Length: 417
Ligand code: EPZ
Image (cartoon, rainbow, N blue to C red; front, side, top):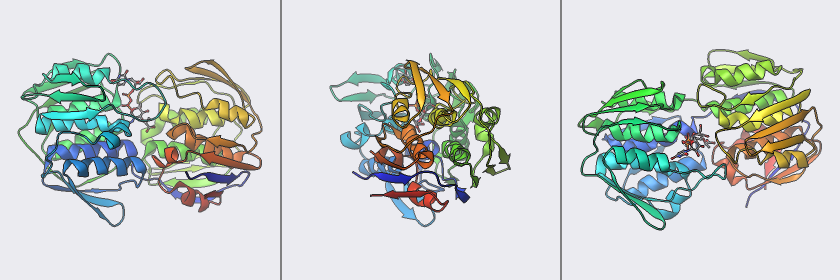
C-alpha cells in the first residue's frame, strides 16, 4: 500500500487548477443510464471513485471511451444487466445513486449493500422509504437489496432528513416516472442544480433544483447531450486552507467561489486573507488566525466535507474554537491523529470538539481514516516540523487527482513511495 512522505515547513507558490467535482461527475455518469445515445462529458476528474463508477457501468453493459484532456464518451444503449457488481458496488457508497436511473430505465435493480468511508453508519432508510412512495417493491437479501417496479409512479415525497444523494437519486428516477413528483426538504447543493440543468438539456422537466422543493414532470424519453463537470468546491476549499496554513500566496484557478460562500466567509472571520475573483481565489501570507466556531450544515451552510481542513486551521488560531459536526457521527475521530502531531483538541462527544490553539505540529506516522480527514492529515504534514508519513493514501486518491505531483509543483516536499 502506497504511503506519502512529507517534509513540513515549506512555503508554497504558484497556481493550482481545480479539477472537476467528484460529487457532480459521479451523478452525471449515473444519469447516463437515463439517456438514449452517446454523450461527451468533459472536465472529468481522474480519481478512484470515478474509475469505480465507470467499471460498474461497463459491467452493466455501458460503452465508455476515454478521450484526451479529461473527456470521455459514454453510451448506455446496450445496458443489459440489472445486478450491480457485488465487489465494485459495495466498495463505492455512491453506487446507490444508480438505483434511480436503473429503476426508471429497466424497472429493476439489484444493489449490493453500499460501502464507503467510515464517517458514519451511512444508512439507506431514506432510499427504501422514498422508493416505496414511487411504487417500488423492495426485498432485502443477506448482502443486497432487490428493487422492482412495473412502472415508476410519480409521488410527493418529504425528506425527514436532508440527503444529497437521496435528492439526486429520486430526481433522476422521477424524470422518466409516470406523472409528477414533488420532493420536499430536498438538498440544495450546486451539484444538484448542475445535474438538473444537464437533464433538462436532455429533455427532462425539472423545476426548483437547488431549492428545498424540486418538481419533476415525467417524460417519455431523454436524449444524451454533451456536458462539462463543474469545478470541485471541496477541492477549492481544501487548497484555500493549504495556502493559508503554509503562509503562502497561491492562486487557486478554474474554481467557482460562489459555490463556497459560507466557507469563505468563515475563513475571513477567522482572519484568513484572500483575494477572490470570478473563477479564482488567491491566498495571502501573514494571516493572523483567531479562534472561530463553526457548525456544519447542508448547503448553503458550512460544508461537512470542509470541516476537517477548517478544524486543522483552527489548531493555528489563537483561542478555543468549537467545531460542531451534526451531520456525520464519525467525522471528528481524525482529531486524535492531529493531537498525536501536537494539536490540543478535546472531544466533547462524537459531534463536537474544542480546538485550543495555536499549537506547533510535529511530523508523525499517521494513517488516513477517510477521504477528507486524509487530505487534512496531508495538509498537517505540510506545516508540521520534520517528516510525516501518511498511510492508507487510497482514501485520499478517491477524491484528489494526482495530488502529490500537483503539490510538488507548488514547492511542497512530498512524494509517494
Ligand atoms: C453526499 O453524501 C456526499 N457524497 C458526501 O461527500 C457529503 O459529505 C454528503 O453528501 C453531505 O453533504 C456524494 O455526493 C457522493 P447524505 P450522501 O445522504 O448523500 C444520513 C465526500 O467526502 N442518511 O446527504 O451519502 C447520513 O447518514 C463525501 O465527498 C440517512 O440517515 O450524504 C447523514 O447523517 C462524503 N439515511 C445525513 O443523512 C439515508 O438513507 C446526510 O447524508 C441517507 C442518509
